Amino acid sequence: MRSFGSVVTGLVAVLAFAVFAPMLWLTTNVADEDGYVELSGVALSDPERRAEVADAVEVELTERTTGHLQDLGVPQVVIDGTTGQIDSLTEEGLAEESVAQAWADAQRQAHQEMFAGKGSTGSGFVIELAPLMTAAASAVGVDGNLFGASVRVESENEVSKRFVWVTTHSLAITLISGAVLLAAAGSSFVLARRKHLALLGLGVAGLGVIGVEYLLARFAPDLVGLPDDAGISERLGHVVLEIAADSFQVSAIPVAIGAAAVFGAGVLLSALRGLFSR
Image (cartoon, rainbow, N blue to C red; front, side, top):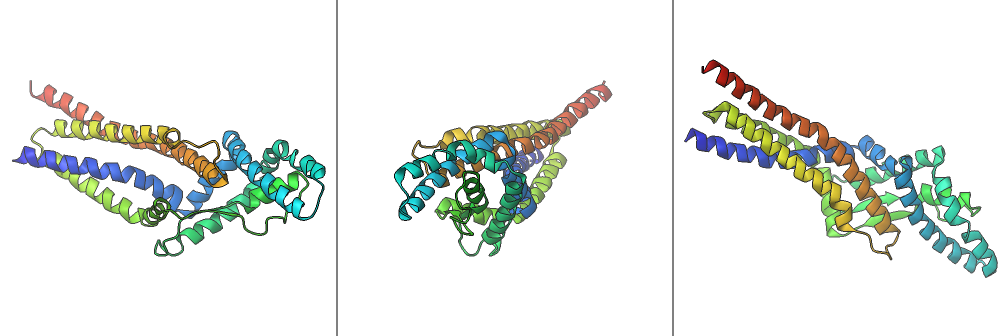
C-alpha cells in the first residue's frame, strides 16, 4: 500500500511540476512589470528581432504615410520618393537608444493597463507602438506626430483574454503548484520503500516534463507560423512569441539542472545503499 501511495503522490508531483515550471516563468517575465519591460526590450536590443520589428513597422508606416500624403494632395512621385526611403531607414531609426527607452516606457504603461484590473475587465493583450512608429517616421523625414500619442495593437480574442487572466493569477498558481509539488514529492519519498527509486523516478519524470516543455517552446513559433499577408498585429505578435519562447528555453535550463540534481541524489543514495548492504 505504501508503494502505491508513493507512485500516486509521485504522479501528482509530476503534474504539479508541469504547471509550476511555466507559471514560474510567466510570473517573473510577464506578470512582473519590470520583467515584462525587460522581456519586451529584446524586440529592439536583439538585432534579429529588431529587423523583424522593422519589417512590420515599415509596412504599417508606408501605408499610413501614403494615405496621409494623399489626403494632403501631395503628388504621387513625391509620395513614392518618401516611402521609398522607409525600408532602408526604419531599422536604423529603431536602433536609437532614445527609442529603446521610449519603447520601454510605453510597454510599462501597456502592462499597467492590461493588469490594472487584476484580470477582471476581460481585456486582451496590448502592445503600444507609438515610440516605434514615431522614430521610424522621423528617420525618413516624416512628421513624427503623424500617428498621435498612441498607436496600439490590441488582441481581444478569447485566447488573448485567457492569457491575460492566467498571467494576472500566475503568482497564485505558481505558489499553489509549488506547494503541491513539494508536498507530493515529499510524500512520495517518505512513502517509498526504496527511497533511491523514488528520487530516480522523480528526477527522470522532471527531466522529461521540462524537456517536453522546452521542445514545445522551441518549435512553437514554427508551429504557429506567419501568413505572407499578415498585418502588423500578427507580425509583432509572432515576434513576441519568438522572444517569449527563447526566454522560456533559457529559464528551463536551471529547472532541468534541479531535476537532474534530484536524479543525481537518487543515484548517490542507490550507490550508498549498495555499499552498506554488502
